[in-house]
Length: 114
Ligand SMILES: [Zn+2]
Image 1 (cartoon, rainbow, N blue to C red):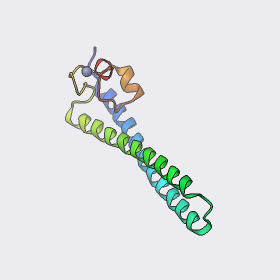
Image 2: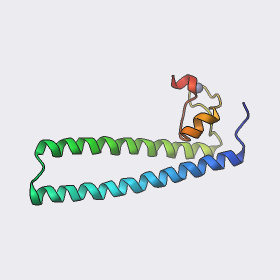
Image 3: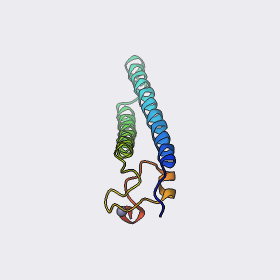
Image 4: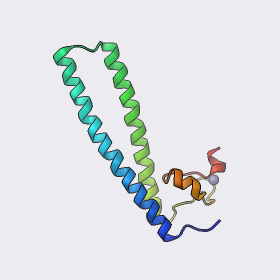
């Protein structure tokens, strides 16, 4: 398999940075949204406690997933910086381009991910 060219790496870096920016913005927006929901609840008391708890648990899971994605993106950017980008974190084999195209923050080759 051919090594990634610096041009290709820059293109993945750009994608990762755009993704990071988008996720950070979404986090901000949902923070504001949940603040609004809390306000509505105290004012109107429409939502039952169960509904509120369920909604809270769901948005917590969403936020946790987003946080996880952000961490993976940060690590991928770090690997670019270190010149280690595109290699499997487990076996050091090169990760297939198609795999990086789907998720530029991917850490494992297809064999290790299985
Ligand atoms: Zn591997």
